[in-house]
Image 1 (cartoon, rainbow, N blue to C red):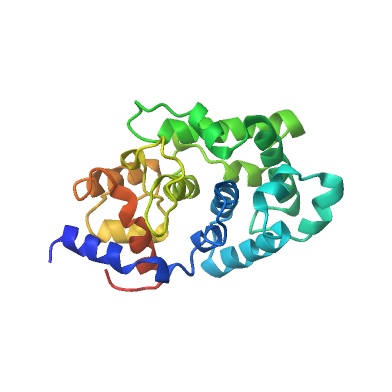
Image 2 (image 1 turned 30 degrees about the vertical axis):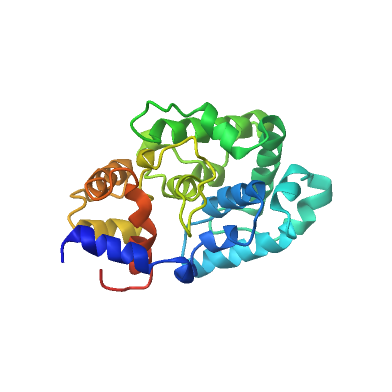
Length: 258
């Protein structure tokens, strides 16, 4: 069987029934687009570490949101809500990082109405891919942290990575996949961005399997590797190369053979 056919078969096999364990499961708990977008951004920011850790942290946050994540963030106040997220931290995000993240998303949502509007103001449709869009989006938030708090912690810097510094920006590319692609897994809420401009979210699973499939020759899981894998996947689907991401990643997570 050739690689294209193999990829297509896995894409079909890894459907909605295989949603767990994946941070994407938490977006599917909501129907309102504003809620999906907010949970998507937050779930992607926390999507590092082992799967169980990610699930545990996101379950705690979902309880705090009490069924209304957009409303919770839009009305977030330190005096009223800081106790609700007391004790919630994640690997090297401190409780203070989480508090400040919610304060900044609150500030930016009030100003721009949605996460999509913030991303689109730094995205150029003529760009080869979403690289500059991610860079402008991360810098927008980093500048907002700087303006508000006068400093940016290591945890906050990790939340908003920059491709020009070599980061594969796995979590940001994951968020964009959820927002831009449309099938039974991904939501397709950001129709202004073409799926052909997406870049694969590279983690250790994607890197390892992509090397084995000769989708990349690079050793480091960095932005250049993400672009190289994406270019090679475009040979199999030029319009929607990232559709294979979920299957490849979960083959790695579940320790299956490709």
